[in-house]
Length: 457
Image: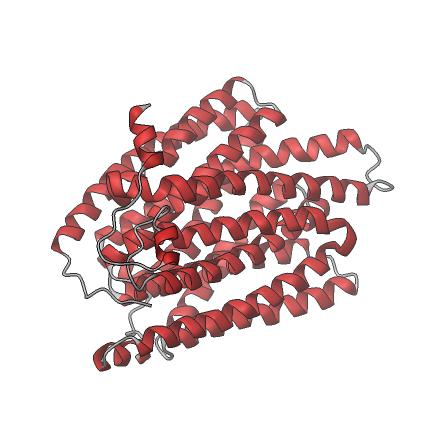
């Protein structure tokens, strides 16, 4: 209790005079003189991006579960991985031809154009649940990965370790508000109204990225400006991962983490679909009611775990980073998952699974996520953009593919929900072992890293 109290009451010491804004922010992270406006802009960018994603995520659940079902949702992850085998090399090739701001804004606006097409097709009556599910899976990993890559390119390692928790607050807040907005807006404006709102937010993200880059360039010397304008080398993301043990460990951890998380979401989806069928038994006449029930359930579910995630991000992440570093923070997520799935093994009930998944996802979207982003701070620019895109895109979805195979085999063998929970316990133990190896490698790499000068944005 004393350790927890010290973590939650700690205020970061001043190292140089700060303005009023930076003094306020220092309650949540070690923000130093000249860093306040820049870190708020970066957090705002992530806020808008995650807000847009959660609008789209709620739409995704409505379309896939009403037009397919929980099994189709799980199996569709294989399609995402197959798509990413094509898309990741194309992303890397594009990154080798443009500078960082054109890369980030160009990819973001490309996805905006995709949304316009989905809105048009959906309003003409096309059943696009599976296609939209595949698209959201690609969109999610690529746009979020490239924005964090941009942040890790802007900040030096020690600076990023101090400021990433505060940048992550923007993401947690955006995810929470996006989920709340989706739950309230799904009935009045429908799924395509949510898509339109998300497209507007993404355009704002592209504008903010350009603004942040301009501020950064003005604060740099000639050498740094030249580096920011240069495209990346020709090496691909998969090539970088295959040659670097550290990147490979990150990739393996992402695969395992996604197996555990996706299996948990499958358990929840099965229970939600079953409850919707129980409450609205007529699948034809009550189809719209089932859609609204599922949409409202997931909107509320996303809202709850995101508000708890926000609290963790505000008051715990910086303090945990300061106490044990990003490497030590990797153990929080699997510890919570291990306890949670042990309980589900005994009692796989919807109210209980909902609470446990809220706690699991809250730590995943705050502590685990920020630690995962910080792992790329001591890497090259190519690794930040290309290897990170490959890991967060392909390897994350490859974890979904493996989980889909587990669902297929388990369903064929007649596994009850408690059987899937038992498998997740085993995977979580392996997750802890991988986290230990990666934590050691991060410390070793950090000790040999020559830090670039702190850059104020």
